[in-house]
Length: 318
Image (cartoon, rainbow, N blue to C red):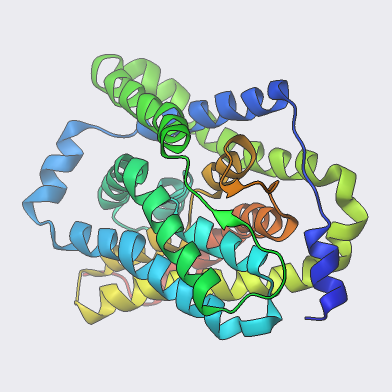
């Protein structure tokens, strides 16, 4: 990637006033509430009876994906800017995406395991998201020998904790309680909120970059390739670990999807709503990578679901 292209990507700016930021926060909270409507305590009981796949899924999402993403950013070298590398690391540090349960259902995967992984990774995100981003972000800035002016990567722990807790923790708890005590209400709301999650992210990306449309279209082929390779890595981690440890086929599909679909909407909120870079505004490459991830993992999730369904027809489970 040429220096001119990198400069073009980093010139992309996204600014949101307080009203716009609050709207995004509220909608994201409702999306997470919709995810939690499918979570019943009985699901955890069944999954925890045989916790092997759950533990492997947590290792894929919380340990392997951030670590291997860091190594991938180093492997890209000067082909990407430090802003793009930090965007990749931020996405890898976020919990599983809010459409992963829907994709697992389409894939004939283990939906109970998918829901459990989403719930556990979301709960742990309060600690693991800021920790992984701080750790691997600083390691990248140290080992990549980044030239020029770079920010000090800081984690305003209270702001990040508050943001994640309000956007994930409270809606998750409210959704579980609704599913437990108001099952009819949960059944009515669950599917519309799943579709809302997809429409919400697409709308957020379009509105955010509308003022930078020309620059975005000029650099999209480079962003597309970077996110394609990163997402392929994430999907491969889940599938490879599931295969290596010989988990059941349905569990392997779930591990693939849960590791390959990340909550990049949370990443954008953290970039736009907190001061992760001391003295610097959010940079274009970080924002563009995070935003395009949210678009692309919908495409890749549907593609993987189609492949799994095709394989299921040719080799049905006995």
